[in-house]
Image (cartoon, rainbow, N blue to C red; front, side):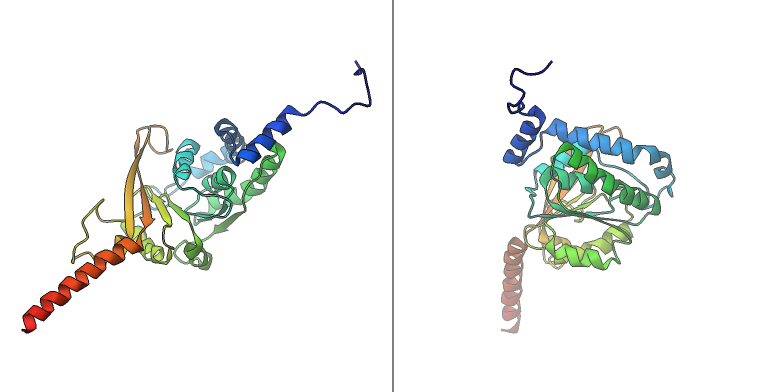
Length: 270
């Protein structure tokens, strides 16, 4: 049936109007975000899940995923925006990198050493961008690399620029965790490292003369909990750790120790 006036402007598209409102607010509604991420995962990752389960057991190469709901909570507290840089060291199939750029508009980079997830990630990325265009939503720039996070020149270039670094190090061995820590010395003030295991020897430990030179003393660490069903490798809840670079606070503590050492040295020479 034709409208009364066939030359009249068509009624506004409700879906496009909704997208305009999301853009004005600068935030995609949670349910829409989860819908896009689920569609992307089922289409581009789901068919390859059996391949992802073929890994070396009890090694740093065990594959595990953070669920989108947990990643959403992690990112919500970081205040990432379109001017920010997010790094995922050990990005797997790239699902967290994709979510960060869609949820916050930030620029994202991920690196993965294992062949299978890295290959899936490279295939997923153009499909994810196409899906975002189909939904009419903007997504930040995404860069993926297949390589070793400890040897990558690109990681070394981006670490000083990073605002947030995610390391899903739940199954990393001690050697890998220890060799990652020196890289964090290049992080800028206020940058955040989120991990599943802390990069400090003990939480809220008092800085003493014995540990004042430890790399991890530049971090102010907060432990946060997550609910059951938030990770792929366990049905129970757990904790993750937010490390914020606080060199100013560390500098004040170090000055006090150096002053104390100088005072004791002066007393001994008298």
